[in-house]
Amino acid sequence: MSDLTDPASDEVSSENEANPPCVLVFNASDPSGAGGLACDAVAIASVGAHMLPVVTGAYVRDTAEIFDHFPFDEEAVAEQARTILEDVEVQLIKVGFVGSPENLSTVAETATDYPEIPVVAYMPNLSWWEDAQIEAYLDAFRELVLPQTTVLVGNHSTLWRWLLPDWAGERPPSARDIARAAGEVGVPYTLVTGMVLPDQYFDNVLASPQSVLASEKYERLDAVFAGAGDTLSGALAALLASGTDLAAAATEALSYMDRCLDAGFRPGMGHVLPDRLFWAQPEEDAENEASASPADFALPPHDTRH
Image 1 (cartoon, rainbow, N blue to C red):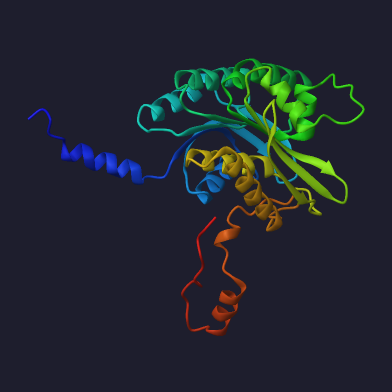
Image 2 (tube, helix red, strand yellow):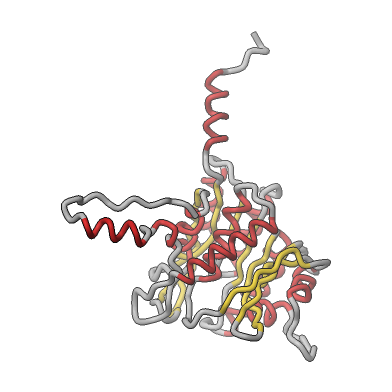
């Protein structure tokens, strides 16, 4: 009898294989919906994964600027992560803004306990914060989180100021220069965004310390956006969790971000927010058909695809 399989076990295994991949996300709550966990939830779901949110704190912000941030106690963060990891199989960990060096230590401990799970880490622009807080946070991120990071994501100017503060070259550092600096503390891959090119274009480059793996150029849009970085890193995390090759995942995530920005909207008096559900909007023809049939109160049909 010992060689007979348990039908219930087979059924659970089959169900698990059919489930969407799960991404554990450490990030803050953002009441504007520009970034943070609200952004991650929609971007990750749009790409076909399931988010497991660990709340690390809360922003005080509107669509124009960040005024403050209240971090959670690190034990509260650790308990959230520990509890869900004991229950759910996680394919990838994404790290956003966690608010304090103590919470970065919790993130690093979690990644150390699950070394087989890849980590996508996003470094946002922290210029809204006090200088002493920025310095302490960046030092802790470099020492604790970067050695656990598989892919680091950030804007060119943000990563330049952080990883190459003494850069003295006549030209700005390239993506490979930044990837080499990240590689010195253990990061194998870096996705550098927003590299300014002539003729109103930006370049976005995935690089290792040895080579460039992917490069995507997009036209600069005439608007100031909030939440682009979390959108990109969330989509990248979901694509990698689903098993997509790194270079292909970076290319698709960049394309997704560009289309989100292109469909962006301004809900308040501040910046434009990416429309992460652009793919769920009805086509123009469907809208026309709906308006031509006022007696039909059904929603117009549309494709739900990322």
